[in-house]
Length: 164
Image: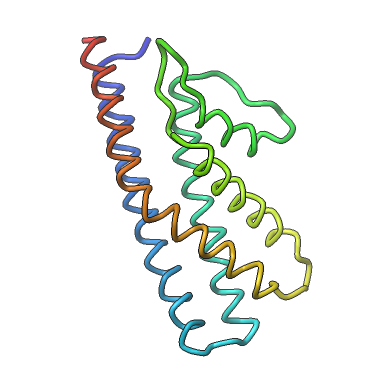
């Protein structure tokens, strides 16, 4: 059974995830700025790609915390995509959606696809055009995520207060 204290713990953990997300976002922005200043070596694009995949990993950890707290189980196949889809669900009587718009869900799914692609390159260089597109999408996600986080936590605390 979820208690007021367990909601407080979840919110504190999600706050920690946001701090980590913002830390990785600073590294991401630094890599992007280097490319903007003319760095074009595959290593520069690789550094940017690494930060993009790490950002997705932190987001996925955030989503997993929410999912494990409120719901049970993910499918054994394609669970990464199913997790993102779950974060878009408004589950009446249980929890509000975290990804509150179809556009935001689409953007997060693009970042997931990129993470899958970068993990399966096997010696190939990143495509600068595709990587730049994912970077722009990620910058949009990161611009909105702190306020999404704040609104989500406020809703969680309202649920927790009602359960008190």
